[in-house]
Length: 97
Image 1 (cartoon, rainbow, N blue to C red):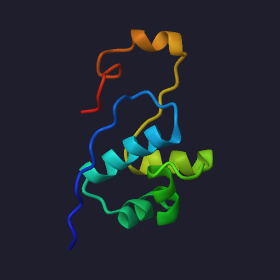
Image 2 (cartoon, rainbow, N blue to C red; image 1 turned 45 degrees about the vertical axis):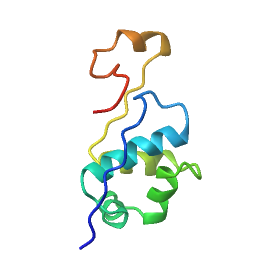
Image 3 (cartoon, helix red, strand yellow; image 1 turned 90 degrees about the vertical axis):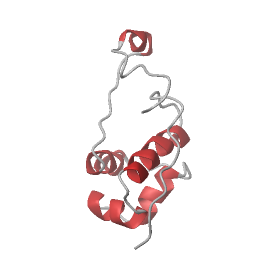
Image 4 (cartoon, helix red, strand yellow; image 1 turned 90 degrees about the horizontal axis):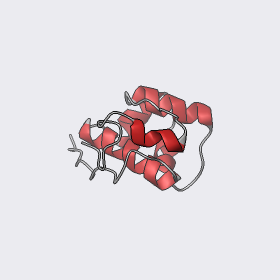
């Protein structure tokens, strides 16, 4: 069985590009020791959809994104940018744990 090497954490929780979102998703998958195909199956999607998101290559539909987040135990929080500074420290961290 192949081991999964953990990817480095994202620079921030704030997502402004597909690349930064993909980095967060990849970090979660790899720190959970899930191979790409296993994680995709867990999310009910093709491995290509997850790979595209992780690599920031192509936009994916909102329903696929929500399936990926749910399948990997992630949540999306949307707040006005001006209120982001008032979030609790765990959500306003400079780097992901």
